[in-house]
Structure formats: structure tokens, C-alpha cells
Length: 401
Image 1 (cartoon, rainbow, N blue to C red):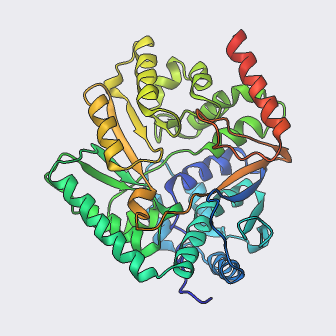
Image 2 (image 1 turned 60 degrees about the vertical axis):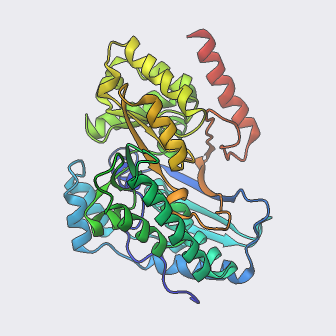
């Protein structure tokens, strides 16, 4: 490696990877998935040297193992079970599951294939590695870090003086961070945020949550609804949310319950988010579409079911900065519990445009899977015919049920 090792602990990933991982281990251990990388920036090109460095960094990541201290920390989180902790004691990443080439328009193609238990765990470290390699090798990293620090300080001051109010917020930036160093600076900075209207509660990065003694945050991602609902080929995919919610409740009961609404549109989600699930889940997460319209729709849904929205959390996590969070908070404050998961804006805000990179599930058990969110352009299915089939299933259900 030309650079120092980027991922140094298997805890250096989002908490929801462990939350989903335990449920996968107990309920879907035989599922197999394919994941594909995509860079959405049209003007970004990875050089052969970058591709080689990414390969070496991923090899180094695959040599890591959980330490007993790390496993003891996970065991303190109330919804993790001893059987899953024992599985992690034996688990290791497999470099053999990765295919990394330069055969793509952006100069970098990555695909992973294997058990869902394994491939799910690769997404976040891979994206963190790609980001850091790119910014360290394409730019003067020291200048980028200096601009990051200046902007971080400006954000901090505006929160402290009340110019912005983000209510309760968490840092969600590991997948698109400038570097491990930058993300750590952000988390460390916000742990000192006191005596102001905004409350920093934690980070999705389990390693940093452990290091700084803050709350690790995260429940489920789109992959959970897509694979549980679409991975079983006997299922009607328009009912993916029901299958996913049912499996989640079997695993966690009333714990760890923030439901993601937009895997196959929020309107379709609400057909399954009836009284039982609306009661059991502590809240819902927004990740696409107009946040104000979505929040109003969720409040109306709770009220229709006779549930007081003030007892439920609306968690916003779509492309947020503090200015947007402030506007959303002021709109919903007092009507529901409002929380924010803020990613790239906290972990990669410099004088250079951040990468818009993703790694998504594209197949489960040999069949295409797809996401149809509340806005176009967020999906990544390679088979347009399957997307058309999924959309027709959703349309039929919405029109006839």
C-alpha cells in the first residue's frame, strides 16, 4: 500500500450492518447476494494507481478480525444476542468475494458476491476506502483537510449561537467521508456541543461511538427490505415491506425499531405499516422525496390509527445540511420527535465536490432486486425488465387493494 491502512477495525462500519447482520444470521443465513459499485459523479476518473491502492486496502481490511474487547462492546448493546456475538468471533471478510477492475467509465468497477452475511458487511468499508484513496491521491489532502476543519468550526459556532437548530442529530458519514481522520475530528468536535438548542447524540460509526463514548445509531437499510421481500422468489415484491417488518419484529420485538419507508415507495409502505407495526416501531426514517410532505404524511398516518405522533420519531437522513435540518425541525417541532442523521455534510465538506458513490444490492438468490424510492434516480438495478415488473406489482396493489 502507498497509503497508511484506512480501515483498522471491523467495528469501523455503520451500526445497521450489525443490526441487519444478526437478523440475517438467524433468519436468512443461506441467502446469497451480489453488490455493485457505482460512481454517480460524471467528471470523476479513478487512475490505475488508485485502483491498485483500493485493491491493497481491501486486502488489508480482509486481514482484520474482531478483538475480544470489540465483541464485549457489541455485547453491551441490548438487542445483540450471544449467538450472533459468537458468530462474529469466527467471522472474517473474504477477499475472494471481491472483483475489482478498471472496466468502467469512471475507471473503477467493484462487485462482491457470496452469502448475504458476508457481502452486506463489505459495503461500508469499501466505500470508505474508495473515498479516502481518491481524495488523498487526486488532491492535496492537507489543503482539503484544512478547508474541512474551517467549515467544521463554522458549523459548530452556528449551532452554539443558535443560528441553526438541528434538534437531536447524529453523524452518518462514514461511507462518503473525506478520511477516517476527518470523520473522527467531526465526531470529537460535536461531543463538546453543550448548552445550545441542538443535541448531538451519536454516530453510525461503531468504532467511533466506542472510542468517544457516544451512542451508536442505526437500524435497517434498503437492502433489508429488498432482500427479504424480493429475495424469496415466491413472494409478491409489492409486499416486501410486510415481510421485512415481520422478520424485524421476530428478531427485535419492540427494540431497535426505526422503519425505513421508501424502498418501494412510502405510499406502498403505509399499506403494511398498520396499527401493530406502527405501535411496535418507535419511528420511521426518511431517505428520499420532499421531507416536509413525507413528515406530514407520516403524522396523518399515525393520527388516523389513533397514535399520538408526539410519541414517535421522524428521522430524516436524505442529503442533509444544518440549514435544511433547521427548516425541517422548526416545521415539525412539538408535533413529533424530530431527529436527523447527517452524513456527507459532516464528514466530507471541503472546497471540493464530494464523491457521490454507492454500493447497492443488485441480485439476491440469483434474481434481480430493485429499489423504487420516492424520487427517480436512486435505484441501481441492471435489469430494466425487472424494474418494470416491480413497478407493475406495486401499481396493481395500490389500485386494487
